[in-house]
Image (cartoon, rainbow, N blue to C red; front, top):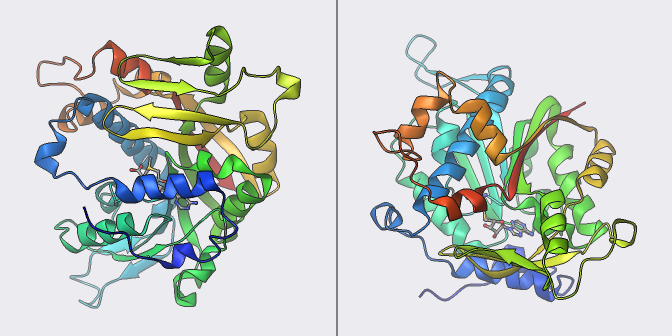
Length: 334
Ligand code: SAM
């Protein structure tokens, strides 16, 4: 495997904890699996379902915000030029797995940041080999929970505000300390326009807590995932608001990586300090119920191989159970 090189995201790493380094190194080490090989994954049904959930969140809640964003015409001239709209900031963008989803909204600009510099290299390569609609894209390595994103970007990238900020399956890593959670929220809100959308997916703290408490060895899961804490879970009034650590394992994806609980009600109150107001929150199973019969998102399930052409799910019971660890949310900036 390729050796990891030092990157700008390493700046300030003396301040970063051992857990934050473990998280970064884990994602840096995960190889990019070719699309064909990907289909061989034992949890491909779950991966496709998670991608469908993100597509629904983006198309249903973010496309309107992008369409009302600033209009840009290409240099081809007004007649031939496609109109592209809207700027997206993807924090914790990983290997750029959502580029295609954003292309479908005909965005004009995308900025993807991640602490894992090898993932950033792969995201850039994915963009360069991309054959879909064109848009400007910038990628940079950045610890988005430790420093201002302005330290990783040219000032012109931040001169007009973003219409959408996206954080997919990554925001919970910020909840190690209050300082990191606040740094993350400042990065989300500062460059988001009023009326812009903050879209995310995170583990469901209510479900995690009740299942950990129900288990005699503070651990739950099945053959494809496991969540455990080192010590028994304290009562609600003794739970720390930040730094409640658990370890997550997901077959063929996440190798016992430390994560941090996002206590939902506290998070809403904290987000409000950054002018972010909750618009939508749902568990993934409930999003499936809400959108699987939808005229656009129902057929999309077949195209994204969540279900096969006969209408049968590609997820077995264990993947379906793992899918509901997560919730999707939408905030609007006031
Ligand atoms: N958002 C992508 C997606 O949905 O495919 C990647 C999700 S992956 C589960 C979590 C990502 O969060 C990893 O790429 C990881 O490097 C990134 N991450 C973790 N801590 C971060 C930090 N402090 N700053 C930026 N990215 C971070």
